[in-house]
Image 1 (cartoon, helix red, strand yellow):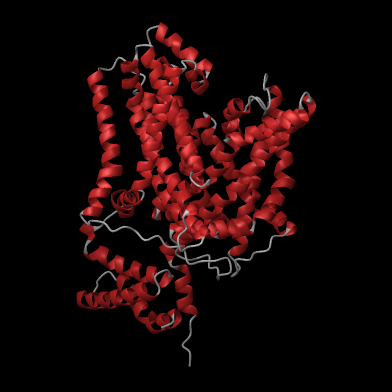
Image 2: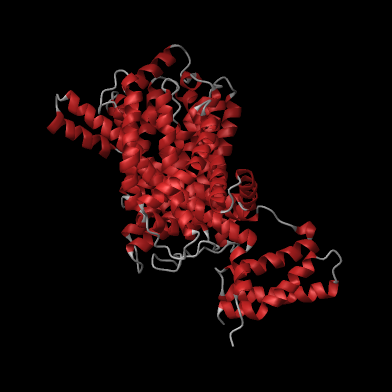
Length: 617
C-alpha cells in the first residue's frame, strides 16, 4: 500500500485518538482499544515505511499514551546508554584484529626506540628535540625529573594537553585514509618516541619515578592512541579490501565504523588530559596510590575495549551490527523535513557540500582571501624572528588558536577582520538552507545577486552568533572547548531565526526546545563532522606541507627574502580560506540535524500531508 493511501485510510482515526489524549477525563476502555489500533498501525508503518514521518508520528502518539499509563517506567538517555553498552563494544569486537595489529606495531616501535637509544645516546635528541632533552636533564640535576608537569597552571595546561592529545589521536585515525600507511607511520613514530623517552630516564637512574608519573596519565593516553590507530587501519582497509562493494561504498562503511570508535575515545582522552594536568604534577604522591590509579586505568582500558566486547558477543547478549549505506543519492528527491539517522545526515551533508563546493570556493576566494591577507599583515608583522618556512611546524602551530579565535587585542582591526571572515564563512551555507526551505529539489542554484540580498538581510544574525562565541573565548583561547559545546545550540538558533521567525527571542526559545529534545544526537553530529574536518588539519600539519615549501625555497626562492614573504602571506591566507571550505560541512550537518529533530518533535510535514490529502475517486 502506498504511504499516501495508508494515511488517507487512517487519518480520521488518528485525529480522534489525538483528541482523546487531550481530554482530561478519558474513557479507559476506549483508550485501550485505540491504543491497540495505533500500535497495529505503527507495526505496519515500521515494516513498510521505516524511514518516513508517518512512523515517527504514530510512534509519538503511542509513546504519549504509554507514558501516561506507565509514568514510573519512563527511560531517559537510553540511546546514549545503548551506545556505551552495546554499539561501541560491538564495534570494538569487529575491529579486534586491527587492534591487535595496532598494538603489535606500537610495541615493536617502542622496542626500536629503546634499541636505537642504546646504540646511539644522541638518538633521543633527534626524536624529542635538543631543547626538551636539555630541559629534562636540568630538571633531573635539580632533583625534580618531572618538573615539566608543574610549569603552568592546571586549567590552561588541561586545555592545551587535551587539545594536543585529541590532535594526535585524530591524526592517527585520519591518516588511515592513506591506505592504512598513514596510521601505521604515526603509530611507529609515537612508539619510538615513548621507547626512547623511557630509556632516556633509565640511563639517568630515574626510571621508576618517570614511570609512576608518566603512566599515571599515559595508560589512558597511549591506549587511546593505539585504539585510534586501529580505527585508522579499519578505515584504510575499506579502501584496500572493498570486497563486493565499490571502493567508495566500502570506505564509507569502514570510515563510519572508525568514527564511532573515535567518538568513544574522546571522553577517555579528556580524562587523560585531566589526570596529566591535575594529578601528575604531584610527584610526591605515594607510589602505592599512583600504582593503584595506573592499575585501575589499565584494567578499564583492557576490560572495556577488549574483554567486555568479547564477553558480550560470545554470550550472545549483543549481535554484531550490519553496516548499511544510506539509501540516498544526489539525484534522489530531497525533502528537508525528514527523519534522518546520523549516517543519513553525514552522507547527505557531504553530497550537499560536494554539489556547492565550487560556488563556495569562488566566494571564499573573492571575499575571504583578501581579508585573510589583511589579517596576516595586521598580526604577523609584529611577530619577530619568524623564519619561514623553517619555523612553520613549530611557530605556526602556536597561532592556530589565534586563527580560530581571533583573540589579539593588540590589533582591533585584526579582530574586526577576523569577525567579518567568520560572519561570511557561516553565512554561505545558511544561504543554501534558506533557499531549500521553499524548494523541493536538491539542485539549488547559487547566484551572486541572491547571495548578496541574503547577506544584507540575514548577515547580522551570523554576526551576532560570532560575537557570542567570541565573548565565551575572550578570556582564554582554550575556552574554545566550551564554545564548541554551545555551538550546536547557537546554530539551532540561527536556523530557527532564519527559517521560522524574525523574532530572535522566540527563535531562541524554540531552538532551545528543539535542541534539548535530542541533544545527544546534536553533539554526536558535531563530533563526527569535526572528525571529518580534522582531515584538513592533519594535511596542513603533515610533513608533506613543510616538504613542499622547503623544496620551493630550495629550488626557486633561495635567498629571495621578498619572494619568501609573499609565499608566507599566501600560505597563511590559504590556510584561513581553506578552513572555510570545511566549515560548510559542519553547518550542513547541524542543519540537517535541526530539521530532522523538528520533524521528529512536531511532525510538521505529516500533519500538512494529512490535511492536504484528498480521497481519490
